[in-house]
Image (cartoon, rainbow, N blue to C red; front, side, top):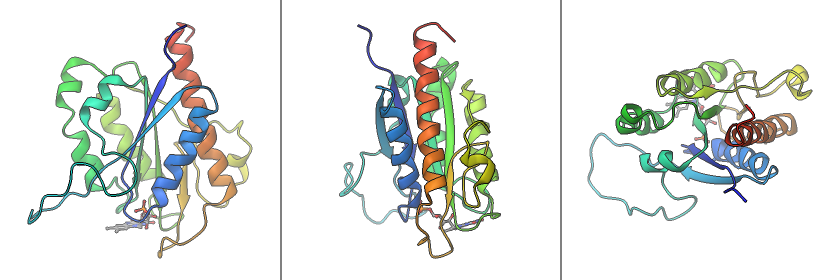
Length: 202
Ligand SMILES: Cc1cc2nc3c(=O)[nH]c(=O)nc-3n(C[C@H](O)[C@H](O)[C@H](O)COP(=O)(O)O)c2cc1C
């Protein structure tokens, strides 16, 4: 039997709300029998006065560009920061020159997800900002189809560009069931497409 598909889920989350979306995506991935590999990104700092341990004191291991060499698909997540991805996500992507030159990610499917304080505060723009570098890497970008019911009636997060949640300015709003369903659906869709590609059916 062939190896199960491996879906790498890389995210940055300062307050934990983007992490919840990452975990819902992982649930969708694993519902297909694929492996979900969750990796977080560390903060970036302009001044380094203390080195942090290479293994975080809590949560997932830190992502390394090398993780990209071993995945069949990628889900990339960031909180919205002025309508853009957070600096740690951009910093990570800017360390993937080797993968770019080698075409490591070319032809692999990817999706992006977010959490923002407000509904119209850059939810979609943040997702799109993460897609741009992935296009340069040759990835096949996937969104969410309107055949998933929640997309037509959500009053919260979740867009055709990718999953997301709206957290309130205190990042304390609950993860709404519509947002969660869309995130699970995104993980499932990404993993199923990666499986089809691996079997030569897509
Ligand atoms: C520097 C900074 C900029 C932000 N910019 C926006 C913004 O433009 N629009 C918005 O809706 N929320 C903005 N937020 C709020 C975060 O997107 C929101 O709190 C998010 O849920 C944090 O995700 P996390 O819990 O994964 O860290 C900003 C937060 C920070 C710290």
